[in-house]
Amino acid sequence: MEGNTLLRSYQYRYDDLGIGIHVIKNKIKNQREALNTFRNKPAAVKKAIAQLDAHIEKLELGNPELTEILGIEGSSARIYFAQMFDEADWKGRKPRIKNDYINSTLDIAYMQIFHLVDAILGIYGFDTYYGVLHKCFYMRKSLVCDLIEPLRPIVDLCIRKAIHLGQCKEEDFEIINHRYLLEWGKNPEYIAFIMKAILDRKDDIFLYLQGYYRSFMKQKKPSEFPVFEIR
Image 1 (cartoon, one colour):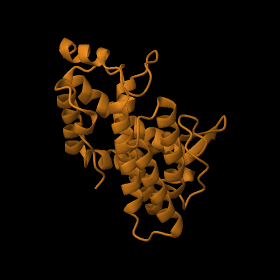
Image 2 (tube, rainbow, N blue to C red; image 1 turned 60 degrees about the vertical axis):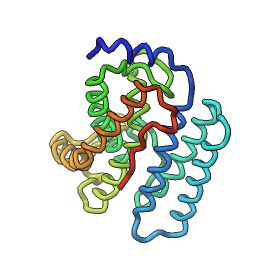
Image 3 (cartoon, rainbow, N blue to C red; image 1 turned 180 degrees about the vertical axis):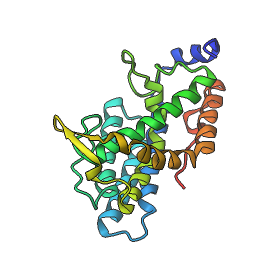
Image 4 (tube, helix red, strand yellow; image 1 turned 180 degrees about the horizontal axis):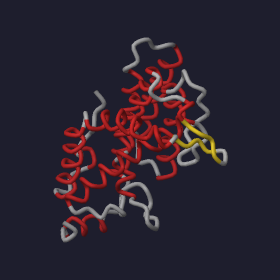
């Protein structure tokens, strides 16, 4: 499938932020919907949902530059995570630093989605190193980084639930050089509950990426690209 030269020619010629804005807007909408699934919503959660709505509106108005898009995404993430893990000692999302057990678990979970999306995109022949929002960077699969964004709340909700059920807890981690690392014997348990959440949506994930491929090949407008929904 690496011989899909027409697809790759479209990728290399694409030089716009429209699709990237569409993807980030989808991500923030899913963050909003994830918070909206909470049965009992305190005032802080309702306020966060309203703030995310305002951020979505900012993306829909005008043509924001890349720095503004990233600023809106970052602000949304801070608002969202503070409520997603409000019952834990949450200190902020810090990818790959593993400064607490939740961040470490999120790294594990996002990597599982990353590999699934990478495999599906490879079926269609995408150059997964060439994204529409994340800048091209040596050895970084920027397109995969782009398209996992709307999918992240799947595992965020999964981990929140696992914390409530006692499946994910600080005692399962050991601290080495100030980094929380999951104990080796606990790996199967964590992969099991994370992968169940992902595979429960495997058909929807496949159809979302298939729709992205078809939209890209037909050179559709960004607004006509598929949207992944959190149920």
